[in-house]
Image (tube, rainbow, N blue to C red; front, top):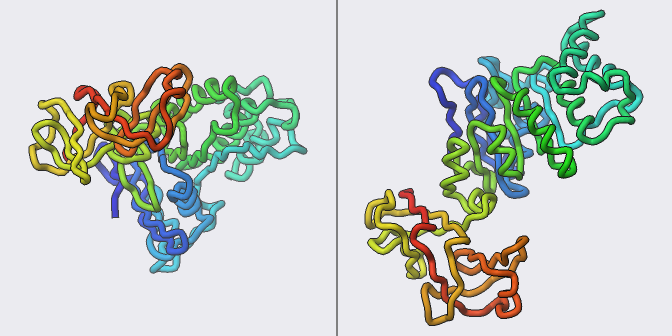
Length: 350
């Protein structure tokens, strides 16, 4: 199993070691107190399974979940704490506010569920709304607020439950381009010093909100590290694609990196990987130029993708960026040459 380790020493606040056979998933994760981990991966990678296992909505076939030293799930010992007793709050894509309640009533519901009674529940609910910048909406009906406002209210409701751990499942994906940035800023403030697991497809969310990144592929952890390390120097194909890079794997050679089919991708001589070592290299498409088939490294075009003011040319080796007018000269299946700037190839030893 691959493990997501907690930084900073000491016992982790969250430990997940679980296997779900029907989903072919092996989950092994540890989270430090006050840390936010962003979980990235393609559809079907196991992200939702991870959240369901932590929240107690899915019982794994084997394994255990521990939060703050308390065993939430232990299959071998037949322990399964009900979801409502886990002190875990989930913020989903859709706010799912109670339409028959006011904004304040929605947040008070969570406070009361956490055991806060009488006027204290109202006071706590107002404090949580102020915390997310939605205090002025307290008396509005839940059906009267915008999408961005609703997500802030849902966050306030999650906080009012006094959770030990926050689970965030694509919390900004349902918001339009104008509503997402202010909610992201609120999340950044709220998550500071809190323990949270954030599932997202957006690298901006990971950059802005997470201390660490975990990449899942096919139900396994394939990459983990600090946000900066994973997103600047990705080792997995998904993380590289997410931040607009290509990834090549092979053997470090004096000129660069040799891929399994024998082609050589040039790299800077000072790259930190020993000659002959297994290596991985993210490649910036902006450092790759399309040339004639007799020039550079041979490749076959697999797709052409317009991306604003550039044309992303995907090949069976790495991607290249070209002016949009190049679309009139190139076709999928064309054999071309790639002139690759060694400075655009970040070789790392595996």
